[in-house]
Length: 156
Ligand SMILES: C[S@@+](CC[C@H](N)C(=O)[O-])C[C@H]1O[C@@H](n2cnc3c(N)ncnc32)[C@H](O)[C@@H]1O
Image 1: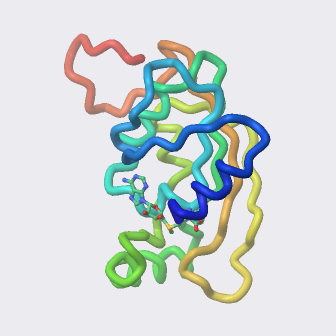
Image 2 (image 1 turned 90 degrees about the vertical axis):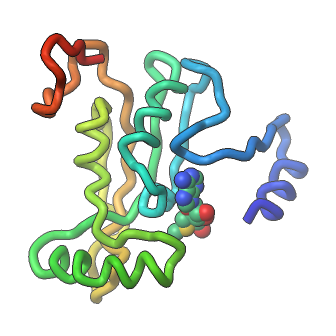
C-alpha cells in the first residue's frame, strides 16, 4: 500500500509528503491540518478514542474529518457482527466488524456535519453498512459529559 502511495505522490500535480506513523500518535503539529481523511482504517486501529483525540489535536479550528468506514449495523446483523468480530479481527489484520464509529465521533467531541450510508446492508456482509461522514471538532465546552470525569475536570 505504501508503494502505491509513493507512486501516487510522485505523480501528483501538487507537492506532498508521506509520514510514517500510527493514528494514535500522528507525527503532525497541533492545529496544523485542514482535513483528515480516514478511509476504512478506524475499524482496525487499536485505540479509537485516542486516534480521534489525535485527529482533534492536529485539526485547525474549523478543520474537517472526512471518513468512510464500515460500522456496526442494527438488530440481528449487529449481533452477528459482534459474534464474528473476534474471528474477523484475527483473520483481517485487526479489523473489528462491529465498531460504533459514528457514536465514537460524538463521544470524542466531533460535530457530525454530514452522514450518509453509502453501502447498505444488502446481503449479509460483516463489513456493512458503510457510512460516509464529515465532522468537525466541537467548540470548547461542547463535549458531552461521559460521567467519567474527575471532579473539577474541564471538558475541552
Ligand atoms: C481494512 S484495512 C484498509 C486499508 C485501506 N484503507 C483500504 O481501503 O484498502 C485497515 C488498515 O488500517 C491500518 N491500520 C491498522 N491500525 C492502524 C493504526 N493504529 N494507525 C494507522 N493505520 C492503522 C492497517 O495497516 C490497514 O492498512
